[in-house]
Image (cartoon, rainbow, N blue to C red; front, side):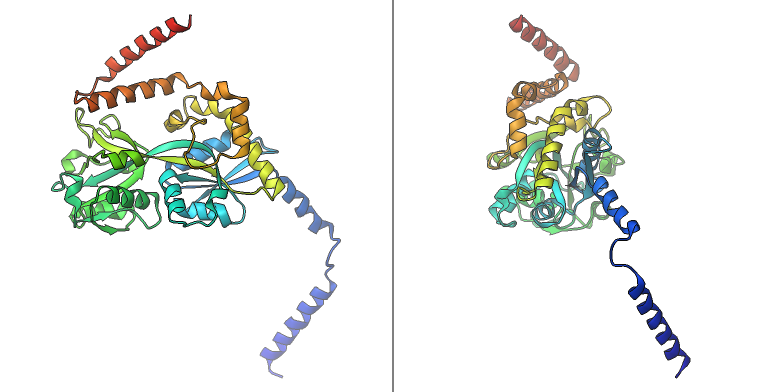
Length: 377
């Protein structure tokens, strides 16, 4: 017998001997991981978020900070591949309990039946908005100039790609679309290979921080047509957010896309359903902590009682809101101030007036608060 075959035979016999003499059960060392596993998995919910650099990463971390108690509750954020895939994962991927999904992706998935029985998924609360940024080279003056030009809309399946395609469709603009990641697209925009790039992000996003108007790049206004404002909330990109790209007296019109915290349908899995219900109760109860200084500014936009038309709210969330209707309905002073400023901006814009300086808005808001206190005393 050759040495090679002899060595192989010896290894085979040795492996068989070890397998035959190893107990199948009853080993205390094997029982220990099972007990530890039960402890580690107690109260865990898995939350699928956006891409790693997305604002949802910070939001998820801050959600986890108010949920985790070190013993009975824990949130495990998982980076997803885009809003549509998040929905599919929420429906089918083992262990995914929650997901953050764009509102327009929800509508798209339902209208085009991309996810079977999607109505079984419920929402917990509307979260933050992301703003649609359209950055163009110097010769592109309006969004209409993108007709038959090349526009990058981020990688396939991304939130940007969904919103950009829908916006172009609603505005009847036919452009050549590419799917490079934003970093590569920016280089191609600078070299003139593409006409513009779209990027959906919570303003102000660091991606645009290094850009200056002297580079020749600029944001395009999104015309707020009736069809577009029926699908999205109008908003503005201002110099306070991007001083290098936006002039102080020339804000850029655009649209905002809402994001929703969705829950999987786990009614037939009691432990997971209980974990989600406990998460909801803790999240809503501790929500005011997220409005404190030091947390993501986007929390100031969140109204946990806001409804998402056409979708069912998770029963535990609905029950909490019914029990705590007065608490949920009371906005913070900062939220009221932000809403008041937005109201002033939109009314001035609609009437053709110039933007009101921030100090004038602050003074007017203080007068409003004094008037409001007079009504309640």
